[in-house]
Length: 165
Length: 165
DNA sequence: TGTTGTTTTGTTATACTATTACAGTTAAAC
DNA sequence: GTTTAACTGTAATAGTATAACAAAACAACA
Image (cartoon, rainbow over all chains, first blue to last red; front, side, top):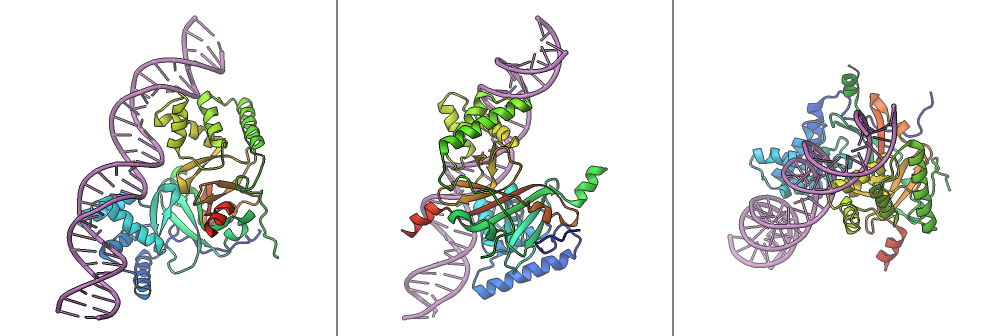
């Protein structure tokens, strides 16, 4: 069997793992980085991150908003969008373009060019990081790449099983 | 200089080229494939493709719709969305997730895993095709990849020049 | 501690993107 | 030419996102 020439991190989110630890560590990481960099982890922002962290399923901004509203943290779209922008901007969450939705970052702290494995059925999202970025290979003819969106849509193992049945 | 391990087609759309020929060939290809495969290239669909082909700038569905409406080809959203779905489904156009917009396919006929080079300023879109798909490298832990979205956002050469000035 | 400047929040309004559902029409197959 | 399937027209509505501005909270520092 040929070894692929790109190594990656395991796609957290689609494989079994200690989710409580996963949440705690992501939250702690975020707090630490905010403290270090003078960012303000406000109640809405923290709660938004916690909500995203509850599962690895991508959530729409309005789903997040509904949760925030239920807790009295604001019920107007900008509340959710601002919190999500903050989280995405600082790498605590990612926007999944294919779904117009958001997931918490599974690999906080790592500098990465992430590949998202998106289940088209359950919207669970795994995050794998390419160790060797492909952006370096496509900066052709003077185009200057600033950000990469790499999303693989398909079926997660659980949904494959359900489909087979 | 190290040679990249992935070869690709030149990113049509961002480099100078004979655009009239580019349009004519794309249109001809589409007609031919429709004839071969029993697809119906109706007036709305043909005109939609022509509109997309006018430039390599990504257009929103409502921009396309406005053009169609001006020519009496329909002025309700489903008209544009249906034509665009048809074109995308059969590979005559692509959806750019990052922009919620559409571009004509620059490499019709080629089986491909396309990489889109999207200028964040002018929304021109180049299309490069990876000869060696990266999807084969990320199907880990039982996730079954069905479609890839690979989009590079950045600045095209023209906009880099304008920004420098 | 009070003042000042900056960031964040609250709120209204609105813009943009997309689909469902169903009726009517056109084209293809037989 | 009738049947069937595909496409089009239209209304209604759902879903996603932002602009603009006022008010409050916070940070920095006199």
